[in-house]
Amino acid sequence: MSHLPIVYRLMIRIVHFRGRQCGSQPRVYMCPLTLTVKVFNLGTCSYRSLSHAFSTSGFLRNELGRITETFFAYCKDPRAITNRKRPTAMSELPNLSTLNYTVLVPYNGSIATGGNSMEVDLNVFYNAGDITWIITCAALVLLMIPGVGFFYSGLARRKSALSLIWLSVMSLGVVSFQWFFWGYSLAFSHSAGAYIGNLENFGFKGVLAQPSVGSSKIPDILFALYQGMFAAIIVALAVGAVAEHGRMAPCIVFMFIWTTIIYDPLACWTWNSSGWIYKMGGLDFAGGTPVHIASGVAALAYSLMLGKRRGQGTSDFNHRPHNVTHVVIGTVFLAILRAVMAGIVTNLAAAIGGVTWCLLDYRLNGKFSAVGFSSGVISGLVAITPGSGYVPPWAAVIFGLVGATACNYATKLKYLMRIDDFLDIFAVHGVGGIIGNLLTGLFAADYIARLDGATYIDGGWLNKHYIQLAYQLADSVTGAAYSFIGSCIILFLINLIPGLHLRASEKDEIIGVDDAEIGEFAYDYVEIARDVSSGFETDKSEPKSDGDSVNSTKIHGSGKES
Image (cartoon, rainbow, N blue to C red; front, side, top):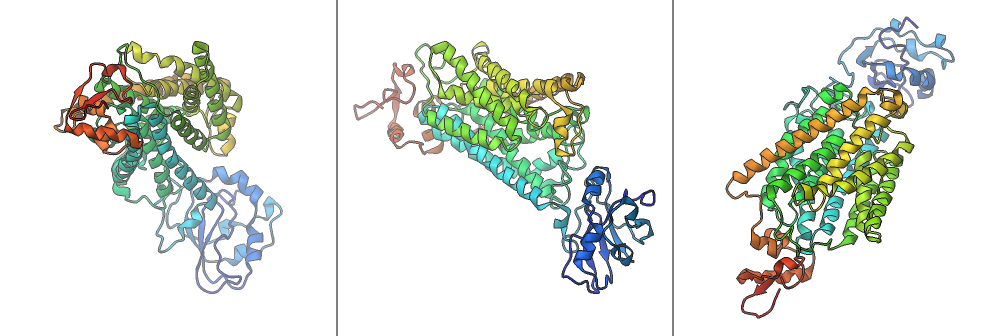
């Protein structure tokens, strides 16, 4: 087959055909590997004869990975390729070197413009099934965002329950605009540098039908949608640190700036083919560093800058999750929808993580905990995130076991650091992400990654590729350090801006962030706090309350306690 040097012995197959008979008007056709030919004066030939002449599926499967360039061409002698019987052997393949064609536009999946939709049917470059699946995944990730809100809301006290759900959906609004404005361009522009992209796609300029950085099988606009949902949920994870004692306005500003300065570069490092971690060989299938380590460490920085809640740390301070049902519902949203990334290993790690955490809690107090099981499920999901597309199913059990155990013990770190991270965002996401990255370096297998037919990796220790663990460690340390230092600087500067101080006032903490910042409540009976607007004085016994009971404040003029 040396007579086919240009297209690597590629067979042309007609996939875009209007009518059973060919007229004299030009038609645009598509080969299996996106080699498009414009045919003139095709004459009278049936679609069946054309499809039979060029259907060589077995041959194409073997050659699919070798084709690196595709192009538009004019075919001046279609009879040379249409007046043939179905080939039964390699020797019967048509001699494409005899065709007279002209290369018009390079289209190799990386530098292509996507073409002009007024001249070319751009849909023929993509598989409808691929597009449908990515749209479905984007919708499922969207549903995870309120899932985070419900999970955090259930862990908080009822007077601040609504604010956490509100923050999760607000993160979707803020990050969606940021992603359109310049976020996608900074993370996934085609001409990005090793550390950050440029403004080539500012305002989604040129983000339409050209192949994306993530995959040449997915158009840019669809890849931008999917990655935008991911960016939003990462911010929702991080801003849970403001629970019960942080103001909403500076948090909104933080969302936009943090996504721009912290997340976008991390995504570029990890998933853009120009990124330094990508080139180094770091393995992160679904976001161990950009998603979990970055958000967990950012939450740690936010908790550090806010300080402790009023009364926290005293012997009389009593905090319990106000709605465990919400915690379980949020966990279900996160677990089920996260499984779209890699169902088998994700489910195994989550299940083992939930059981492990529950047993660890039972060891201490002799009771099973729904919150403990939910926390373990999330820990397992976090741990398996970077390796979900690289590790065999049996390794997922180790991810769930080790991840949940490490995260469970990491919940004690907040006492050592004297930080009020009562939602344990750093313990679960920060520590869990690091554990997952390191375990990926141990258990990544080249044959698992190759199951998609396109991904080649050197693997981890299972493949005797021992340097992979060092790559994973470098990825984790740099990501954590960058996110923590950057988040602290951003929060420090925001706090200096008049009207954007981070911490809620003492009065607002007593009333509850729901009433003070939002003016609405998750539960009707909390509305009695509105009566405080006439003035209040703090009861000396207030720290003994969990903030939900009616002895926290004294209502003037009524003689009643609220």
